[in-house]
Length: 140
Ligand code: RTP
Ligand code: MG
Image (cartoon, rainbow, N blue to C red; front, side):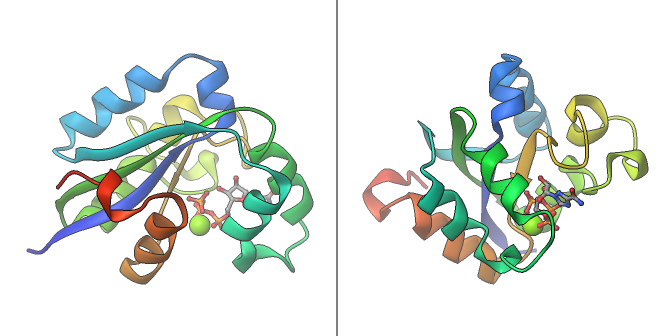
């Protein structure tokens, strides 16, 4: 199986709860390597640009406000089948459907405040990694 990179975000709710380390431990246990990392607070423009695919959705304004409500940790993960395996580790968007042991089942507050983001495809991963990192900040 191919080694893939994916973009992971520890969202404002999880940073506020001081569970960055717990989430990273789960990532390491899932055999995904953290090969780039930074803590940032998004501007409105950055949050809107990152989630531009959702701009026509009814939840867009609330999503943008949430994502700029506090600092986030942005990281690039690498591992075998990394995009799909990190999505599995996160669990589904709707936490009522998330299996125990997934990040969202264990750490999400709600459908919106759901602790983590992960790229949903290889194409999204490429775009999202480039949104936050230049090549010299990624240590493969
Ligand atoms: P993400 O992009 O953050 O990894 O999450 P996802 O793929 O599981 O879900 P997506 O459909 O891309 O939605 C992006 C984020 O928008 C918020 N959301 N709120 N109905 C709602 O109130 C609603 N639906 C989605 C969540 O923060 C979700 O992660
Ligand atoms: Mg998504």
